Length: 139
Image (cartoon, rainbow, N blue to C red):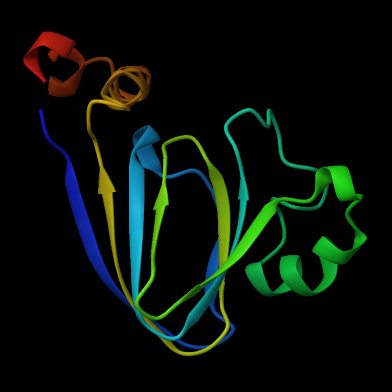
């Protein structure tokens, strides 16, 4: 059993990705070749995003929503720079704002750490799919 999804991303300053968890509970890595990306992250232990967070664009979140959040509701943050790679385990909420033009490569992965969660997510999404018949011993 293997899922492999890799993309090259070329983005302008001010663009980004809104709040999400990667599909099917996959984990991911993002290698930045050029530019700077600002990340905000909530761990899987966070049951729901604070009010106003999920509906905001990346630009609005970092510029308007984040400064108004109580300290306890603020996400973890970092800035990824050219030559650095971010690894994101499955189940993490995240949003990204490109602080400059960026070039990156990213990949969603299934491995021993998340295969059970991925299979459960796939089965719940489409119980009739071929993936629903795959068991851990098939992986």
